[in-house]
Image 1 (tube, rainbow, N blue to C red):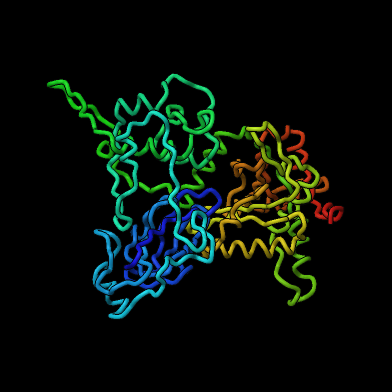
Image 2 (tube, rainbow, N blue to C red; image 1 turned 90 degrees about the vertical axis):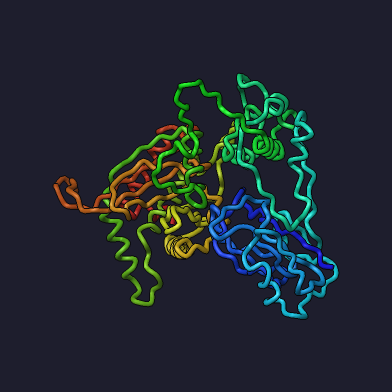
Length: 489
């Protein structure tokens, strides 16, 4: 007899809570090996091929291409052990090609020889090595009724996907036992940002939940239990006065008929991060116009030196990045983050320089690691590599996280200025407009010079205007007189 194991979408790291299925790499009935990639998913960070930790026959797939799945939801089921061709254990309504597809792919004598469940040699978050995953017992909050707890129990069959009921208003009993009064205010006892995001996605007010953790801490299990209780509660019919028109609701029927674009994937992650930045960071912006004529001349001289085999060209962005690292060495308060729980400013020793890159999937911010140790040529080569990976969708999550300062060259869009939004949880971002010929007073006379506008948005908690202005002025001085950089090379 074959044992059917359920492979759930693993935690792909970096705090990701969901992923969108881009392309299935296996069909129902295919024989998969341990650690064979079975699906390509798009997270808020990058495209990722997910390997299956089990070896056997695929009996079901959950979710069509384009479907977004939360971490922990089933991806597919695998029959591990001896599998008869006629027993293609396919759940009702799961995957495509469930019946005959299994027989045609496995053949008349197909079997998986392992009598014990096959285990992965690699470790996915939530999946160990050598044994099937162990279901963790969830702690449900005190006061939830037994009927609510039974509704949260997993399905009896691992091969049958669970279908959730449509969301409805919570019952009076569940609301009275699992929630606190609406007028209670103060800090929300939540530590994990994943819990906050899960509650936000389901329109749950965390202030109305009673946490089951230490000192009333709200855990993920509490939020999931509240979501299930909302889904299982009966829908109360609205009271309608005779002769009166029905009230207009905010339901799907009452919504506008315009085009709706889901906020998910990269766009959803950008929306969450920008909204959080505006909500949490008291930012301020200062800007200055700088004469970039000498910088462009220095770049032309650098790229023209040494002949055709001198290596790749140094870009303007690479020179600006090198200027930023020199400026951050003088003003380290802008290379920091704020720990509000400890009420501390954390100055960071390394400069992990992010730069904004526009792709077909949306705006991403790849990170040049240890930029303070690189020269302009090295930074330029790394920027070129990361930009190409961003365009092809092959950036790894680690290459999109951990930045300490961001450089945004929006001049490539033909605009002069902007007020950048800080890339949370960083403390500052430098924006660079287009470099264009403009009238400029040079050495006491009016001349046509190549001028650029530089904008610095900074977290006013980490420094005052003096440090921010000093940083921006130093960057402008290096743009106008690149020889200033020689002091730090």
